[in-house]
Length: 539
Image (cartoon, rainbow, N blue to C red):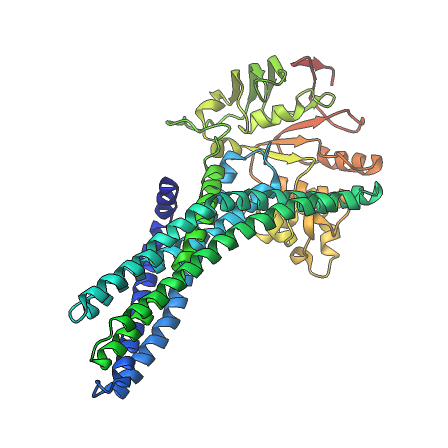
């Protein structure tokens, strides 16, 4: 736990000033509150000559400091969590360049959202209150000990019990519940996302009740874990309340002839224990935060499928793409995909890679994009082994259009600029016209600023594929891999789309991956994948 939290704090280092300012303002609010209660007690005992003025002044300071504390601590936490979420997203994109792979989308989303949010309690509910407790305890003893040393000792023991012992006990009780809660939230998201994305199939097979029951079963696990956290929190809170009441009782028992001192001490003790009222609950939050930290760091530390070399080679000028004696399998327990595959793709040529499902067509694209690396053999770009280049350099030369290319729920302009953020409007229209979708976009009331809808829902399958093609053409990559670009299209739309592909490219190397050819493609070479090898066929 400590090592995990140390890493989280390290990631928040850039927000140290904000986080420190939040704690400082919190301590100022505590000091004002302590002073306000002390002066109020003195005023009640008719000891303070300037009590009305002090009360007004301290009251204003306390209100202002409390407001500033809320503003600064939450602003600091929002910034720190934003930094953490961006860092985690970047780590996920590095070790999942080819997609989620064997990960579950709901679980990844839970780590990126729920687990990161759970870490706000690490600062707001743990660090800030602990800093306050460390500040208040010696201040209380300094004010009480000179006149009542035994009372100060009793108050100190009860304070330590409420501020430190009970929170640690709550952490121990809530640790397992926090771990279960984090995992259960991920599984609940998996069930809900599966149900939402597969809603048509669920309705078609009348499986609504079964899917609902599965989601409710996972929800029950979440509720059970939340009950465990709530129980640990309630017990710790009750213990802290009893400690506070026992401290006040100790003050009353220690009361002597000087009633005024007793009143002041009582007010002071009430103020001191008020400042740590949330600490016992912080122990329960700490257990949840520890589990969340493990899951966040676990997702970030997943091994990178293909690591960049320590000393990368210079990106070559040539664009020859070659596969030399490639042996590859996705996992040791899975059968090999390639066994000695050799293939050479000359610059500026149009090549088709054909084969049935499972023959390795998409795996070939993954190797070319450095999403995966062969167990033996070399993938060559120019005259350089891809293993000696960074993934970013490789992907600056090789573009990709897949059968599941995603259109984001944003404008047409934003979707296109994903490929080339510096492109001007003329370049956008050129790419749209090349993909034969320009006239459709011109006919829309908002033109390039038309929203495409979730996954391109506002457009037909063929139109969405052409928008994706325009985005690919907008990129400056000299090699373009088209991985089953017509999958899911009807025969007529497929032929129209392939005819369009014949007219685009502008000297680029075009690699068309497909199950079969329709007869309208203009190609220089055709290769078929069979038994883990590439076999040349007549064009």
